[in-house]
Amino acid sequence: DINGISNEETHLMQLIASHPQNYHTMENTESLFQAMESITLQPFHVHHQAQASVSYDANQLHMATMASSFLSSLVGEFGGSNTAAAYNCSLEFHRLAHVAFEEKGILDLLKISINGLSRAVTKLSSDPSLVDASCGVVNLTIDVLSWEFGSLGGKWGRTGSSALVRPPESWREYLIRPDFLGAVFQVYTS
Image (cartoon, rainbow, N blue to C red; front, top):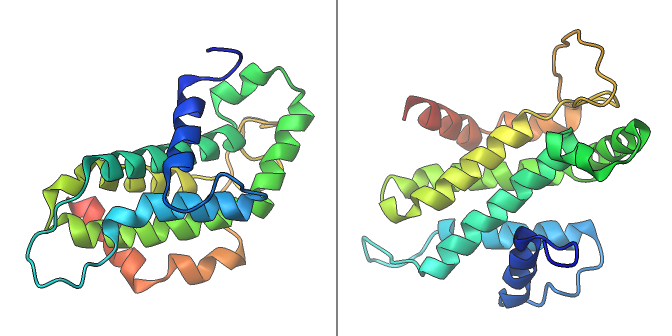
């Protein structure tokens, strides 16, 4: 840490600043998620070329892997990871942060992860150079689908009893998509 900024935070800022679009002037979370989606899913866009194989820039693949890792870390921080406790804030602060992210961020990450998983599984079978970027998307999807709903989600206020995790109705249209379900089964059988 230099002046309170970790290497990961510095790298992320460089990643965003070097992206071809002008995302370093982000004003809200929607812009952040759009930037991260663009970076994460870039290697998985369908190329309409007649070529059987497309080569990817190593930097582009690294950026996609780092972006999906950042989004997974974001889910972990708001979901009640052990590192979130290091901020020395009250349990109420962490609980409210969890609720706020559940209301304003987790659905966006579900959309990104589902789109990414469907594309990654399709592209990975024809291009093994996408393994790291695909693993990043798979890990992000696992993290998002593991989200604990409710104001007592995560470890903030947990009483020790387990409860059935039920995603909100707003997730239904994404969770029953045939491309997503097919991708989940393909990942499971791989």
